[in-house]
Image 1 (cartoon, helix red, strand yellow):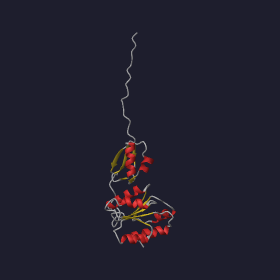
Image 2: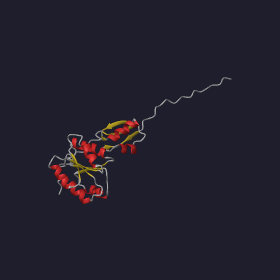
Image 3: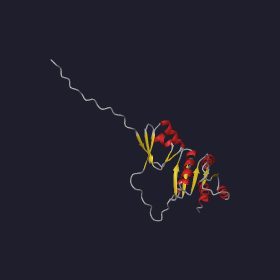
Amino acid sequence: MNEQRQSVAQPPITHPSPLVSHLSDRVITGDLLAEKAVGATQIVVPDKAILTPTAHDFLKASKAQLIRASAAGPKASPSPGAPGITSWKLITVTSSPAVSRLTSELGTSWSREILGCPDDAATLAISAICRGESAGVVILAKQHFRAACRANRHDKVRAVPVSNPADVQSSREQLRLNCIAIDPTGRSYFELKNTISSFTGAK
């Protein structure tokens, strides 16, 4: 008795699909990637996203592919009379209750970013100034000398570490200041506000 054997179709060989992580943040840091993109083989970020040095280190170590993609849909047109750029940018590396209060009270002419280290803050400050996104940048970081020093590596940036309005005024008399770095440790809300106001010219 001949035994009839029915052939069984073998499933096609497939390659595993890439694990894709989509990020919408404008600033991509190593800490952000470590939090949201661990294990991803492809990381999709906005076309104009800024990658900090720590982000590049993460990509190199993880061997993930970075993909820049334009946001879906047309961009909304600005309302009549709206400014084309954000006038000022506040980058917070070191926070405190005074910093939190100050940040919450900033007006619509300010954009706010929170980063993990002074080097990343300097990179973002350079980008904001060189792209014309901001007239001036304020960095709040305990290592404010380091932040200002690294920001000054670009010839369009004129950054100075300051502690009070007098420092800002003295700096303005010697150069066209467009970035200040402040150590907010132990400083009150009014100290920070007055120093920043002397930089922006706000009353």
